[in-house]
Length: 271
Image (cartoon, rainbow, N blue to C red; front, top):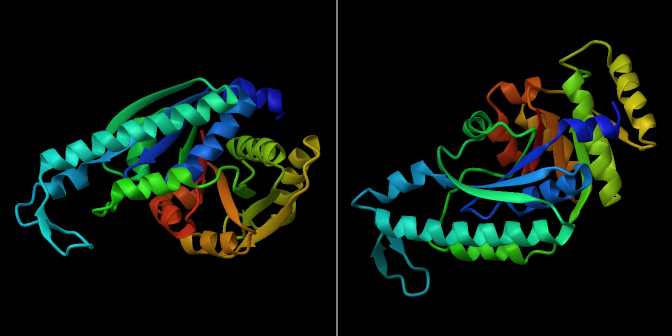
């Protein structure tokens, strides 16, 4: 599979933007990839339904850190906060997309802030996920603005989960494109729980890497859960992006949200 094939396959890239402000790295990766592949960027601001239901509790109070004064939290107030944050997220998406000439759309989606719910709700070819759980504090607006002020182009390593499947090959070509565009190192992650023929799996990956003239290192994962992925990410230099086929066994075993929390880096799912 070559870059032309990837460009013919990937038409839409979805990126999640949430109230926790953790979507900036995922946005950076999605924008760069959309520019490489000529794809449309679909931004989705996640209104966490659990957060809204929490605001309905009559005994819930906000303690302001400066004055230590208590203030009630209502559903109406929470919804106003979320609308403000959604407008800010849309402006952030618009600015990032316009800088590289990427077509974009934006929508607000209300539901469970879980990776599984989002991947079922949307049919984009690639989904760029940051931490999707909101866990919003009283200073959520300040949090998302602080993330917006962080310098872009901070990604300096790409990791890709490779299982040898056709979709894994597309994930690897996607990783090659992004690594070359960013000029960063690429690491191919292999699991010894998935096959006894690690040498054969490496050879498949090397064939694709040679087509792109892309150097890469290989890391063997000794487990099959979020912890093993987090350990691999810790060994990489600086800010990382993980790319994987959406149906990789690591991610379909119910640990995608755990991976997002443990890795603290965006995950690009190729479908």
